[in-house]
Image (cartoon, rainbow, N blue to C red):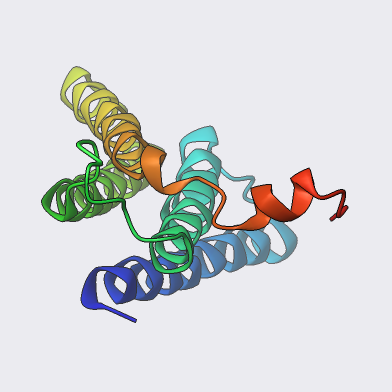
Length: 152
């Protein structure tokens, strides 16, 4: 397993822990203090788990598991994949922090702007990753077995 894969997977685990702790906080606040979670806190919890943990785990495993890029693949660039990692990670941390802040403070235009930019960063990072990976999503031998009648 090479380093970029480890970055995605380990970051995914860290984001999962943050999401679980946020969920635990919301549960305790609701059940024991009758404090219902603010919608921004729910959104922070959801995005740190879905984008931060689940998507980054999917991307890390895909990077590790999919066939190597063909030599003539012009889309696959390891530097672009690493850039996507940093864009998604930084954007997810900023989104999480800004939504947590927004849930405890009065949301203002600056927080809304930061939240919007960080959400755009998440989208951009995911697009960069999958555009780069597009050529690696291909059959390696299975198409021959399928042509011979084998069913999977």
